[in-house]
Length: 183
Figure (cartoon, rainbow, N blue to C red):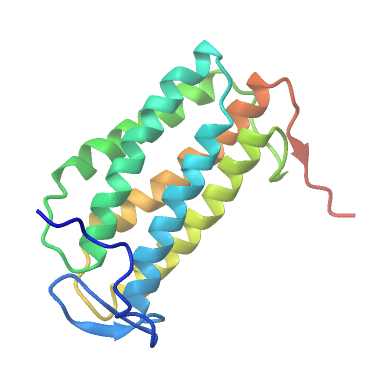
C-alpha cells in the first residue's frame, strides 16, 4: 500500500473538497464551521497539555479526551459525511452532570469573571470562546444546509462545560477568579 502524502497541492488556489468531493472556496461557511470545530479541538488539546499530575484532573482529562473524539465526529458531520451522532445525546447528558458535579465544589458565581488565571484554566476559557464561535457558525450554516440540531445543543453545552472547567481549574491551582469591574 502506498503511503499518502500530507500535501496534495489541490488547495493551492484557495479551493478545498468537502466530503463527497464537492469543491468549494476555503472560506466557505461549511469549511469555516468544521475548521472552527477543529480549532476548538486543538485548543482543548493545549488545555490538556498543561495538566499536571493532580488526581482531581485525571477525570477531567479523560472527559475531554472523549470530547475531542466527539468533535472529530461533529467535524465529519459538518463536512457532509453521514455519521452516526447517537453518542451526542448521551454526551450532552454527561456534560450536564459534569457541570453540576464541578459546581458543587465551587463558590456561587454572582458576577461576571475575567477569562484568566492558571494556564490550564486560561486555555479552558479560550476554548470556551472558540466553542461559542463554532456554535454561531454552525447555527448560521444550519440556515443553508441540513445540520443535526444535536450538534448545536452539544456545542452550547460544551461552552458551559469549558467555563465551569476553567473555574474549577483555577480553584485547584489556588487562584481566585477575577471579578469583572464596570469602572
